[in-house]
Amino acid sequence: MMESESKKYRLDKTVFSKSTVQEAGDHYSYWKSKSYQERLDAACYLINQMYGTTAQTPLNKTVFSKRRHKHG
Image (tube, rainbow, N blue to C red; front, side, top):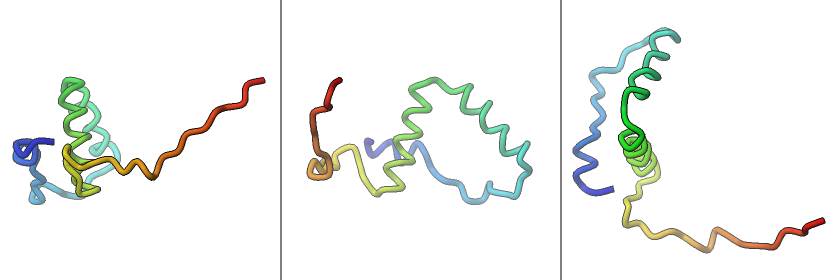
């Protein structure tokens, strides 16, 4: 993500409150009203925040392996 993304999505901790399951479920309609690209951008931002990465963070390719599947 670009630096402007972190400014676009800010966590406002003052807006949190206890809610019922029904009230929490209302977030679904909010995100469904957003475009696919907006939802994807928000998801990428949250993942990057969780793992402390950026779009420029190199992928650790030593974690992956490849193998052939036996057919038949």
